[in-house]
Length: 260
Ligand SMILES: Nc1ncnc2c1ncn2[C@@H]1O[C@H](COP(=O)(O)OP(=O)(O)OP(=O)(O)O)[C@@H](O)[C@H]1O
Ligand SMILES: [Mg+2]
Image (tube, rainbow, N blue to C red; front, side, top):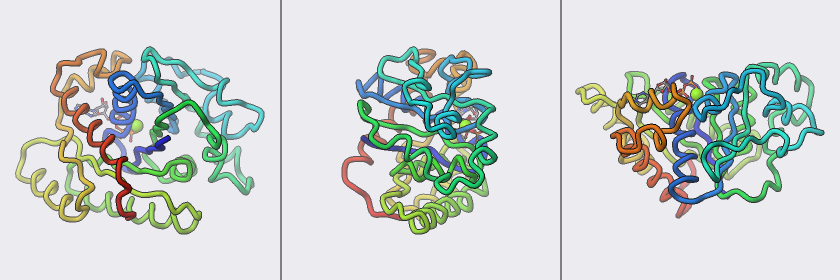
């Protein structure tokens, strides 16, 4: 079972877009059994799948704070066969307060998912911050995929995540955690974007996907309809780019790459 987290503390880098569409691609196109875990108070993973997460209960927050709550009671079927969701909503904002003083607070998600069976992939959608929820994601995952919007500060952000991953690996005794892929997003053909992309490839050799996720309005539209790109616009260039990234994701899991 591969455990893959989409993390970047910068907001709006296409974490949710990639997590949801790739999870759906793995389930729909590859016939894999996938559990998508939303760890963002915005609840966008659920919303992107057409699930109304406002006021939903129980959510992943209950799973993390209450040992009596089971995964089965939180789990939602989605419209896509093989894809299940552990939804989040605003209630997740209470997590640090609810777990204050709990010694195992950073490892709650890992602990609740321990012994999980019946899935080929667990995909985590992290929030745009480096707080308790993201730390829980890092300790529950083994692979980190970093979606990087190709803007001037992209390199800084990416280096910071590598640093955080290294620290978490050491301080929390979680040696298997590694950054497996860096996915350039919001690519537009400009000299600046190309220069940043080149630097990214130099700086993180072998880890930057060959496919860059360019802007495609169908991707945004699909989310606004509560659908994945595979349902909304399977023939679009957005779908083609996402499928190509999906293929690279599958390949990246084959041989273990060097830890960062
Ligand atoms: N390739 C793309 N083309 C067009 N729009 C896109 C593309 N990728 C993402 N978007 C849109 O950009 C917005 C931000 O993307 P997304 O929500 O995936 O980012 P995020 O990193 O999860 O954001 P946050 O940090 O808030 O969680 C969304 O409205 C999404 O539909
Ligand atoms: Mg998001």
